[in-house]
Length: 91
Image (cartoon, helix red, strand yellow):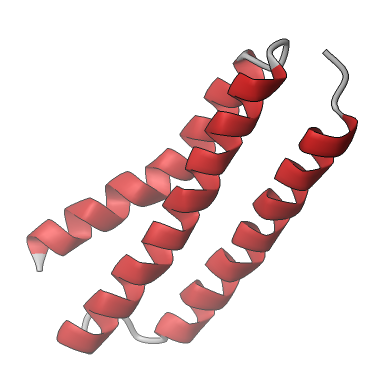
């Protein structure tokens, strides 16, 4: 359980960290997209960890569907932003 919690914390922390690091490289479109993609993947990874914890330790997370829903919303926003950057970003 503690290892899963650690993995969830790391993947959740990686979401905004990669956005910030990518924004710092916004001058280089490909780098910006790469880090946004890392952020998106970390978001998806966080959902997986929440689902796994909810199945293995149902007493730990009271309502995993709320967390999963919020991460899915964030994931969709990041994905749409990646598409925007790919199509419209001027370097």
